[in-house]
Length: 208
Image 1: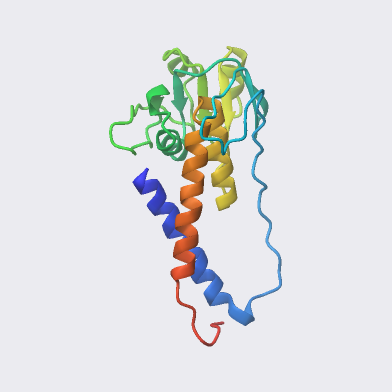
Image 2: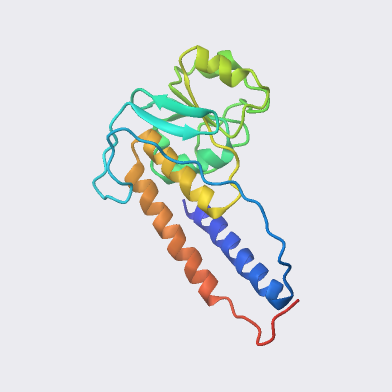
């Protein structure tokens, strides 16, 4: 979790420096970002509530459509290093039974030779998997095959903005019954990043 915060904090510094560098000479050209994916839950209380307890079944609005998770997942396979780190950061590590070959943080994660770029469906279901978390359906068939076999597949594409990072943390929190922890982590990250941004000195004359 510490490394996760440090990485996001470093990103906050980079954003601040970019703002400083642009100054009055910045272009008016607009940029396009992907809107955060919404979290749709059934019978849940707001994610900021300290005593939140997720009720299942739950529906998550993900990149692969509205995904229904019928019961609390206890055998999660993560096919994305980013989402592996997120799952452990929100306290869902005990529910993760296997992660892909690129997941090496935090220390002790159950790393395997699985890869999201060429998923082995038989190997994935061999863990008794009830939820797969990945950042894409890279071969175009494996995630669909897992869904056909009754395994819930949650696709969360790589986040492009901090808001998308926050949204994905809360999506994973809802999916794993760690919504309160996810909301707390988001709040702490926002506070840390805002403090870093406020501490970055600005030149008297804008830099262009």
